[in-house]
Amino acid sequence: MLRYKELHGYKYRVELEESVYINMVFDEPIIGNRYLRLSLCSKPAPASTLLSVKDGYMWDGPSGPTIDDRTNMRASLVHDVLYQAMREGLFDRSYRKAADQELRRLMIKDGLAQLVDPDLPQSLGKKHNTRFNRAWVRTRAQAYYMAVRVFGKKSSMPEKNPRGKIVVIP
Image (cartoon, rainbow, N blue to C red):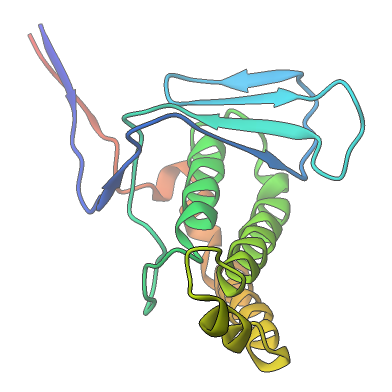
C-alpha cells in the first residue's frame, strides 16, 4: 500500500534540528509528533517551553508580501510549527494569540541581533545599531504580528488546511 501526502507551496526544509525556548505553557508536559516536540521546562523562566523542530520539517517562510531574511526566518519557522500543531489538534486553538506573540518576539530578538552582528565590520555594525533601526525592527515585527492576528485565523483551523491531504492507494 502506498501512502503519501500532497505537498504544495513549501520553500524551506530544516536540515538540522532547531530548538528554541518559547513563552508558552501548555497543559501537557510534552507535546509532539514526527517533526516537533514541545517540552515544558522544569524551572520557571521568561521562556518556559522548549520547542524542537526536527530535521526534514518543511515550511513556506514568512507569508504575505514580505522579504524572507535573517530577521524573520526563525520566527516564521516557529510560527508555522505552532499553527500546524493547532491544525493537527496537538493543542487547542486558544493558543493562537500566544503563537502570534512568539512570531513578534522572535522577530524583534533576531532583528536586534542583526544590528550588532559580529560579522559586520565594526564601523558598519555601529552605524546600523541606531535608535531608528531598533525602532524599525520593532515596527516591522508589530506589522507582522498585526497581519497574523487579522489574517491568520483560517490557517489555524483543521478544515481550512489546504496542505497535508493523505492519499492511500491499495
